[in-house]
Length: 337
Image 1: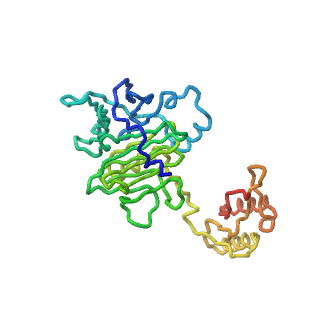
Image 2: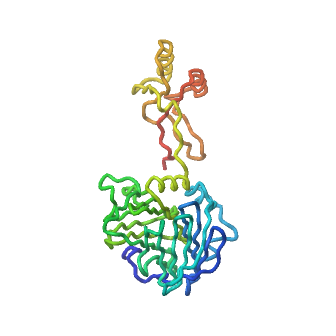
Image 3: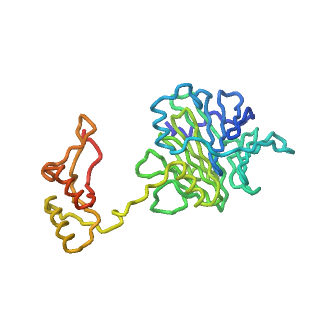
């Protein structure tokens, strides 16, 4: 069977009709489907584009599991931006402008298309008649979103790469560990995208079509995409504000570490720290040598120390507290089957 992204028997969502709006959200109906398209001003310079049935977009009783997944993906759920919605005059087909300051996302009714502008300059446009594709007939609902690429446009992001920083010509899957994929992709044209989903996401960066970036979402009742605008530093700032800032390192990790010698007893390591402190040497942290000093019990979420290495954990913690020094302990965060 060909990959789901190669199947042509899908619904091309080729029209959108304006339905309703609030100060931060615009709703569009997709004719001949049961789907609603929502475009939200999630933050200044950030649009959130969601598509699905009304019940899927706004469930009456959200499942606890879905809420946990949402909390894993986003640290900020509430929209803080405002939309200025207007009709675009003098066009052959209805168009609407959804503006946030100097940024405007233009929605074309038919064929359905999204075009992103900043100060009147076009930054991004979806593929003609292929902006959004959906297959709801199978057991695993499928979505594909496609963006046109210019010849001079480089695509960056999507996690770790040991090769070219420009991702054009690559095909990556979020469920393939070798691809080491992260969700943020950004373009040198001044836009970025992030699919908010914990399942399988495929990124076709001009691999199948040299003029298109295509992102496919598998087995999700809702298509959920964030669109960022700005310079790379702006996009990264928006992305981390949305998903969570990296933690600020304390002073101890940036200081002088003492590595335990292989096979050395923990008590001897503590004695060495005491001796070095008495001699006036500065030490900020202890790094225990491998292997793991503790594991996890099979029947409950509780750690179990290796008694051959740490026979009295309370005494060890008291000694570390008196020395005011943290200890870094190797561990394997898993339960062996």
